[in-house]
Image (tube, rainbow, N blue to C red; front, top):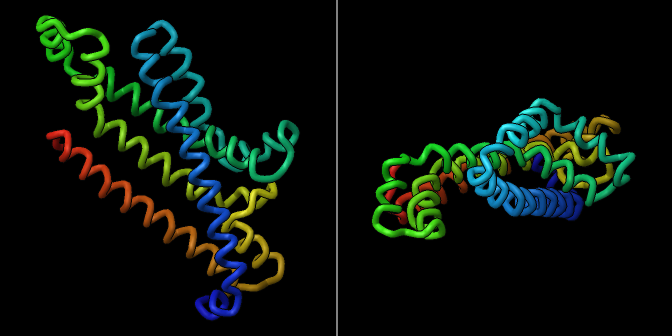
Length: 210
């Protein structure tokens, strides 16, 4: 495996870079959608049930199925892969954001309002800091899910480390196959550890503990 990487550094590097770009773009889209939407749903509880129901349906759809669904809609390549990965990672962060915000102790919120805090101040000074550990756990889960599922983007021309696996299988090149599979596993582990460390730092900086 290591010998194959040493013999094909450019192929491996390009596949790794594409995988990282796919994952980063999808995670950024998830953050931009899930965080404000989760916050909005806590203010519109009547819509929360329907939104959570839709999100729970998305959780049951396999990642490969989402990628295949993109084919007739957006074709093949980078964009449909990012859209599919965004839909795949969205439920974890949206549900954690909504849950974290709604489970903030109402007595604390009421006490803040009693001290004259505005809705915005309650949100930024009370709700978001207290919900941060749960929200960030959702970010970590979504990141790992996206990095892992990005392997399947190779099936619709999205590139990434999955191309090493599919090419290795097609050509019976087992060192290449193992290199791709192990690289994905190590990348997912690295993302998990990095986000876990960042979560501890952010939690500590807000004066909270898990």
